[in-house]
Amino acid sequence: MRKSRYTISSLTNPTNIANALTSMKNEKVNSTLVSNYVQHIIDSFLISMAKRYDVKGKTYFKYPNKYYYTDIGLRNARLNYRQYDPGHIMENIIYNELLRRGYSVDVGVVTDRTGGANTQKEIDFVVNDADKKIYIQSAFQMDADKKESSELASLILTKDFFKKIIVRMDIPHNFYADNGIFHCNLIDLLLGRVELF
View (cartoon, rainbow, N blue to C red):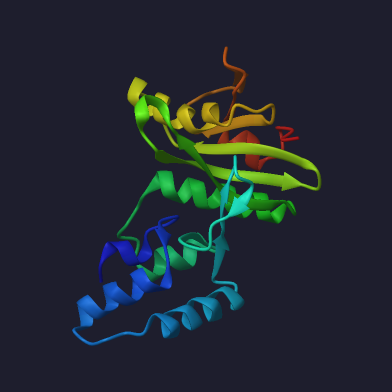
């Protein structure tokens, strides 16, 4: 089986899945059938769907969406523990924790128009609790300047006053950076040592 079929948090839609299956099986697979199967899997609580939200336009995109496993252990067992991806697994764990706490969680999209470009950048999670909102990025490690700038770019592009958090595994303690972004250790987040709102 192809790795992409089990990649956590990849943007996808039923048409993409149907096309991939058609290519692999050499027989036509209907996107409506795939859509129905995806909905059954969601209804069975095996995966959760996160919709993409335009932070500036305040609207939802219909497709593509992101999907997260409700139980990483089942995903790993299905793959016979062959595809270990700590960054995406961490993102999945954060998503599940935010849902467990009762928050509404979307995937944020901001447009970078610098230099004449029109590039969409992603914020891993836009987290809502009634009228309160925060942005969260998941970054397993930020050990290079390029990685740090890519993780920070989407948060900075929002240009609003909502709290911005980067959850990391490579820091021993939590801190606010000079730009006002809160850097948080994953373990502290999961153990409830950090106030999100």
